[in-house]
Image 1: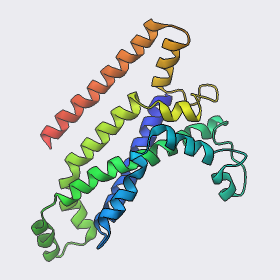
Image 2: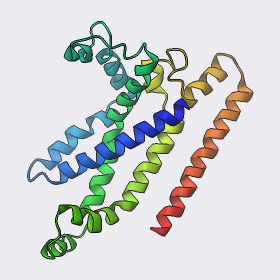
Image 3: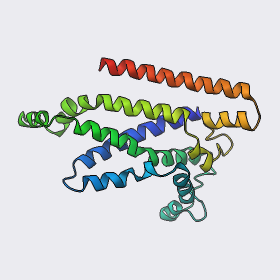
Image 4: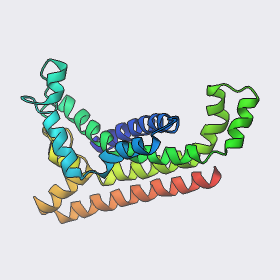
Length: 216
Protein backbone atom coordinates (compact mmCIF):
# COMPACT_ATOMS: atom_id res chain seq x y z
CA UNK A 1 0.00 0.00 0.00
CA UNK A 2 2.77 2.43 0.89
CA UNK A 3 4.49 1.77 -2.42
CA UNK A 4 1.29 2.36 -4.40
CA UNK A 5 0.50 5.56 -2.47
CA UNK A 6 4.02 6.88 -2.97
CA UNK A 7 4.08 5.97 -6.66
CA UNK A 8 0.65 7.42 -7.40
CA UNK A 9 1.19 10.68 -5.55
CA UNK A 10 4.70 11.22 -6.91
CA UNK A 11 3.91 10.46 -10.55
CA UNK A 12 0.74 12.58 -10.62
CA UNK A 13 2.42 15.61 -9.05
CA UNK A 14 5.55 15.26 -11.18
CA UNK A 15 3.53 15.03 -14.37
CA UNK A 16 1.32 18.10 -13.84
CA UNK A 17 4.08 20.25 -12.35
CA UNK A 18 6.55 19.15 -15.03
CA UNK A 19 4.02 19.87 -17.78
CA UNK A 20 3.29 23.31 -16.36
CA UNK A 21 6.98 24.14 -16.08
CA UNK A 22 7.52 22.94 -19.65
CA UNK A 23 4.86 25.34 -20.96
CA UNK A 24 6.35 28.20 -18.95
CA UNK A 25 9.85 27.38 -20.17
CA UNK A 26 8.91 27.18 -23.85
CA UNK A 27 6.97 30.44 -23.60
CA UNK A 28 10.01 32.43 -22.43
CA UNK A 29 11.09 34.92 -25.11
CA UNK A 30 14.64 35.06 -23.74
CA UNK A 31 16.90 33.17 -21.36
CA UNK A 32 15.42 29.75 -22.12
CA UNK A 33 18.79 27.98 -22.03
CA UNK A 34 19.82 29.54 -18.72
CA UNK A 35 16.44 28.75 -17.18
CA UNK A 36 16.67 25.15 -18.40
CA UNK A 37 20.06 24.70 -16.75
CA UNK A 38 18.79 26.10 -13.45
CA UNK A 39 15.68 23.94 -13.47
CA UNK A 40 17.72 20.80 -14.18
CA UNK A 41 19.94 21.27 -11.11
CA UNK A 42 17.73 19.17 -8.74
CA UNK A 43 17.89 16.20 -11.11
CA UNK A 44 21.66 16.50 -11.57
CA UNK A 45 22.50 16.67 -7.87
CA UNK A 46 23.36 13.41 -6.05
CA UNK A 47 20.44 11.77 -4.24
CA UNK A 48 22.26 11.83 -0.91
CA UNK A 49 22.91 15.57 -1.10
CA UNK A 50 19.34 16.50 -2.00
CA UNK A 51 17.82 14.14 0.58
CA UNK A 52 20.00 15.45 3.41
CA UNK A 53 19.03 18.95 2.36
CA UNK A 54 15.36 18.07 2.67
CA UNK A 55 16.01 16.39 6.01
CA UNK A 56 17.38 19.71 7.24
CA UNK A 57 14.35 21.56 5.82
CA UNK A 58 11.93 19.17 7.55
CA UNK A 59 13.78 19.26 10.89
CA UNK A 60 11.32 20.01 13.74
CA UNK A 61 13.80 22.07 15.75
CA UNK A 62 15.76 24.15 13.24
CA UNK A 63 14.05 23.35 9.94
CA UNK A 64 13.43 26.13 7.46
CA UNK A 65 9.92 24.93 6.61
CA UNK A 66 8.60 25.10 10.17
CA UNK A 67 10.22 28.49 10.57
CA UNK A 68 8.39 29.80 7.51
CA UNK A 69 5.09 28.25 8.65
CA UNK A 70 5.41 29.79 12.09
CA UNK A 71 4.52 26.58 13.92
CA UNK A 72 6.07 23.16 14.39
CA UNK A 73 4.95 20.24 12.21
CA UNK A 74 6.42 16.76 12.86
CA UNK A 75 7.18 16.15 9.19
CA UNK A 76 9.36 13.07 9.65
CA UNK A 77 8.15 11.70 12.98
CA UNK A 78 4.41 11.63 12.36
CA UNK A 79 2.81 8.83 10.29
CA UNK A 80 0.43 11.42 8.83
CA UNK A 81 3.19 13.69 7.51
CA UNK A 82 6.08 11.29 6.86
CA UNK A 83 4.76 10.04 3.52
CA UNK A 84 3.98 13.61 2.49
CA UNK A 85 7.58 14.60 3.25
CA UNK A 86 8.99 11.71 1.24
CA UNK A 87 6.76 12.52 -1.73
CA UNK A 88 7.75 16.21 -1.64
CA UNK A 89 11.45 15.37 -1.65
CA UNK A 90 11.08 12.89 -4.50
CA UNK A 91 8.89 15.20 -6.58
CA UNK A 92 11.34 18.09 -6.23
CA UNK A 93 14.17 15.96 -7.59
CA UNK A 94 12.33 14.32 -10.48
CA UNK A 95 10.16 17.16 -11.83
CA UNK A 96 13.01 18.23 -14.19
CA UNK A 97 12.97 14.78 -15.81
CA UNK A 98 9.30 15.10 -16.74
CA UNK A 99 9.77 18.74 -17.68
CA UNK A 100 12.54 18.08 -20.18
CA UNK A 101 10.50 15.33 -21.89
CA UNK A 102 7.49 17.64 -22.16
CA UNK A 103 9.68 20.43 -23.51
CA UNK A 104 10.90 18.07 -26.23
CA UNK A 105 7.29 17.23 -27.07
CA UNK A 106 6.19 20.87 -27.24
CA UNK A 107 9.13 21.86 -29.41
CA UNK A 108 8.39 18.97 -31.78
CA UNK A 109 5.05 20.51 -32.83
CA UNK A 110 5.45 21.94 -36.37
CA UNK A 111 5.25 25.73 -36.34
CA UNK A 112 3.09 25.75 -39.46
CA UNK A 113 0.45 23.72 -37.60
CA UNK A 114 0.45 26.20 -34.74
CA UNK A 115 0.11 29.12 -37.13
CA UNK A 116 -2.68 27.36 -39.03
CA UNK A 117 -4.81 26.65 -35.98
CA UNK A 118 -4.33 30.21 -34.74
CA UNK A 119 -5.35 31.51 -38.15
CA UNK A 120 -8.52 29.42 -37.89
CA UNK A 121 -9.38 31.34 -34.74
CA UNK A 122 -8.70 28.67 -32.10
CA UNK A 123 -8.23 29.96 -28.57
CA UNK A 124 -5.58 28.66 -26.16
CA UNK A 125 -7.79 25.86 -24.79
CA UNK A 126 -8.77 24.67 -28.27
CA UNK A 127 -5.16 24.82 -29.40
CA UNK A 128 -4.13 22.63 -26.48
CA UNK A 129 -7.01 20.18 -27.00
CA UNK A 130 -6.78 19.70 -30.76
CA UNK A 131 -3.08 20.27 -31.47
CA UNK A 132 -0.74 20.32 -28.49
CA UNK A 133 -2.08 17.40 -26.49
CA UNK A 134 -2.30 14.95 -29.43
CA UNK A 135 1.34 15.67 -30.22
CA UNK A 136 2.29 15.24 -26.57
CA UNK A 137 0.61 11.84 -26.06
CA UNK A 138 3.74 9.74 -26.86
CA UNK A 139 5.88 11.97 -24.63
CA UNK A 140 3.30 11.78 -21.82
CA UNK A 141 3.26 8.00 -22.02
CA UNK A 142 7.06 7.83 -21.92
CA UNK A 143 7.32 10.15 -18.92
CA UNK A 144 4.56 8.43 -16.93
CA UNK A 145 5.79 4.91 -17.68
CA UNK A 146 9.43 5.58 -16.85
CA UNK A 147 8.57 7.45 -13.65
CA UNK A 148 6.03 4.83 -12.55
CA UNK A 149 8.52 1.99 -12.91
CA UNK A 150 11.24 4.07 -11.26
CA UNK A 151 9.06 5.14 -8.31
CA UNK A 152 7.67 1.65 -7.77
CA UNK A 153 10.90 -0.33 -7.86
CA UNK A 154 13.88 1.99 -7.37
CA UNK A 155 12.99 4.54 -4.70
CA UNK A 156 15.38 3.84 -1.85
CA UNK A 157 17.77 6.67 -0.99
CA UNK A 158 15.10 9.30 -0.37
CA UNK A 159 13.02 7.07 1.90
CA UNK A 160 15.98 5.51 3.70
CA UNK A 161 17.74 8.78 4.53
CA UNK A 162 14.58 10.69 5.47
CA UNK A 163 12.60 8.16 7.50
CA UNK A 164 14.22 4.70 7.10
CA UNK A 165 10.71 3.46 6.41
CA UNK A 166 9.32 4.90 9.62
CA UNK A 167 7.80 5.99 11.84
CA UNK A 168 6.88 2.37 12.32
CA UNK A 169 6.18 1.19 8.78
CA UNK A 170 4.40 4.37 7.62
CA UNK A 171 6.84 4.92 4.73
CA UNK A 172 8.20 1.42 4.25
CA UNK A 173 8.10 0.96 0.48
CA UNK A 174 8.98 -2.17 -1.47
CA UNK A 175 12.75 -1.53 -1.92
CA UNK A 176 13.11 -0.80 1.82
CA UNK A 177 11.29 -4.04 2.67
CA UNK A 178 13.51 -6.01 0.31
CA UNK A 179 16.70 -4.57 1.80
CA UNK A 180 15.53 -5.29 5.36
CA UNK A 181 14.58 -8.86 4.52
CA UNK A 182 17.87 -9.53 2.74
CA UNK A 183 20.35 -7.65 4.94
CA UNK A 184 18.80 -7.54 8.42
CA UNK A 185 16.73 -10.70 8.82
CA UNK A 186 18.60 -12.71 6.15
CA UNK A 187 15.29 -13.89 4.75
CA UNK A 188 16.59 -14.28 1.22
CA UNK A 189 13.57 -16.30 0.10
CA UNK A 190 11.04 -13.53 0.75
CA UNK A 191 13.46 -10.86 -0.47
CA UNK A 192 13.87 -12.71 -3.76
CA UNK A 193 10.11 -13.18 -4.04
CA UNK A 194 9.45 -9.47 -3.49
CA UNK A 195 12.14 -8.59 -6.03
CA UNK A 196 10.61 -10.93 -8.58
CA UNK A 197 7.17 -9.42 -8.00
CA UNK A 198 8.59 -5.93 -8.54
CA UNK A 199 10.24 -7.10 -11.77
CA UNK A 200 7.00 -8.65 -13.05
CA UNK A 201 5.02 -5.48 -12.27
CA UNK A 202 7.63 -3.39 -14.09
CA UNK A 203 7.40 -5.66 -17.13
CA UNK A 204 3.61 -5.36 -17.08
CA UNK A 205 3.87 -1.56 -17.00
CA UNK A 206 6.27 -1.69 -19.92
CA UNK A 207 4.04 -4.08 -21.89
CA UNK A 208 1.02 -1.82 -21.43
CA UNK A 209 3.09 1.20 -22.43
CA UNK A 210 4.32 -0.44 -25.64
CA UNK A 211 0.80 -1.52 -26.55
CA UNK A 212 -0.65 1.93 -25.99
CA UNK A 213 2.16 3.77 -27.76
CA UNK A 214 1.76 1.58 -30.85
CA UNK A 215 -1.95 2.37 -31.01
CA UNK A 216 -1.40 6.08 -30.54
